[in-house]
Amino acid sequence: MTLASSWTVFQQVLESDRQFQGLGLPRGWYLRFHYWGRWCDRRQQSPPVEMVTARLLEHRVTFPLSFAYAGMAKGILLDREYQLADALGFVPRTLVDLGANIGLGALYLHCQFPKAQMVCVEPDPRNIPLLRQTLMLNRVPAQVIEGAIGVTSGSLNLRFGQNPACSALETSPMHRLDQQVPVTVQTMPDLLTALGWDHLDLLKIDIEGTEDELLSQNNGWLQRVRAIVLEIHPNTTAETIASYLQPYGFHLTRHGHGQEPVYLAMRSP
Image (cartoon, rainbow, N blue to C red; front, side, top):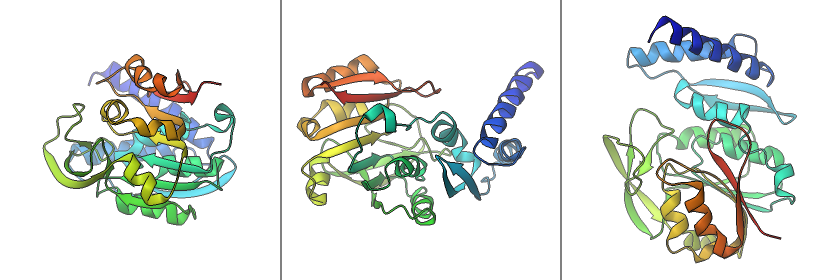
């Protein structure tokens, strides 16, 4: 890394630190958090998990966080990827979070829709304890399902590497990862039947490239969904995803102005 690029990164870290101050974190918190994490990474050490207390949508929240999840945390907390209360135009009563990771997305959604019944689906076993801790600390009454959602039920390998925010099913072309673990896979109809839900108000999807397969194959269940917020990964395009959703009456638009390509799919009036 050159001196110029190091300076650019430093300026970006300072800006993130300023934004985290807006959530009630002390000045210099993210500066320390970022560079301590970088120091650990360079020495191939696991960055420590620390408890973070912040102000989120007028709620005081506490959650575990390590540098490995920093990028995801900035997207959810600073870019407000899941700020949906105004965009939806309705209050969801049922909500499924596919790719819940450590629960920051679920926490953000719960702060907006505290009465919604919520289910968090997460396949990476490294994230499950932190997900459960985030939900417990903030009294989010969400059901946790350890596994993945796919186009057919059964078992698939979850590929993973050092970054616990980028694990992906073997059917995803997104990442070249050198480790794997088998995980249980069920379909969306399986899940909705098990929950006893005839329909789903809001589906959040962040599944590292598997969204193309999920939304294009065996997708009749989409007629039971009212709205979808999803991150679209580089193995597909927004136009392609829109073509899968359009037959079911959805209109897909870019949501927010964050760094990650997050989209909102709503049924046409």
